[in-house]
Image (cartoon, rainbow, N blue to C red):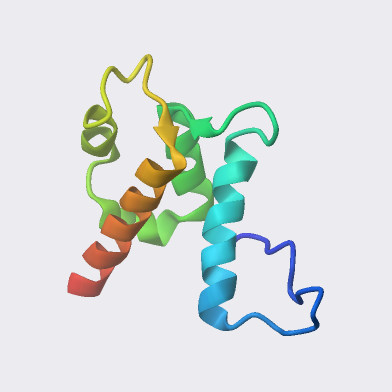
Amino acid sequence: MGQCCCKKRKDCQELTNVEQAIETVINQFHCYAVKGRKEYLTPNELKELVGQKLPHLGNCIGPLEEKIECVGDPSEARLEFGEYWDIMGDAAKGCQKK
């Protein structure tokens, strides 16, 4: 999957596999949201992130355009972290059902 910027915490405790996965999902959002510039993804950034970093999970999301339409006009859509997290959760649920 993606890179994890912290394999060990400052308190020297290693992250569990689940914690590493969650951290990776969070880091990928911030990477594609162009760190420091904004705190949301555009529909194109979400498509790029899923296509490049989550190709297998992307198959479980279903039509990405439908997810994006739910947040409004695709040309003006801004997917904030909570919406991104919901889409990732839906994808995980979709993969579990397969």
